[in-house]
Length: 238
Image (cartoon, rainbow, N blue to C red; front, side, top):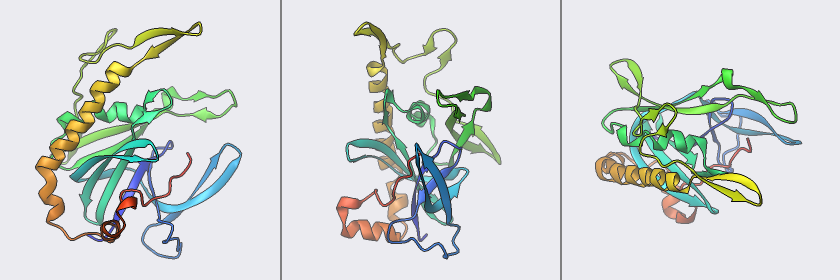
């Protein structure tokens, strides 16, 4: 094991880990590539690694707060090193849709088996924005393997048609300046505890996995400069 890479799911159905600022050599033949992006009127490109899914044996899980934004980081051992899935917890209107997806399944992940985080593009749910851009919803999926076949991890809160998720409170409807809004605070409090409980479970059951392997270069660097630990990648604005 010789590398640590921090991945985030992108809206086009892939996971991307940007190269650190001090490693921007695009001639290195290790799978790195330029990812081109547009954000409003801005265009650019970022050098890094692209994967269709992230899979491995979980060795760590923790909630990280960087510049006031919390994310859950799930580290997995692979044949090439350590991959860390980073999922932002809060969005503009409460918890992000990806956190809503995985927080309902974390309790049922078997930590003795490899887990696979994939991405599903819902082409049937595509829609156009007011600017004419087509948006295809992209959802984070969680699978584990039963023999050679991947099986979706069951949710902790069963969905009941017409009623919502069993065990999760319905939103509180409020009127703000004459407009009706929905407050999901009670639901989000329960799901946030699912995140912290999962981190505690991983700490208890998987700590020996990390201790049993040599440190990666990124971990050695973070040990020397603790304030940048877990934030070695530059984000891509889309």
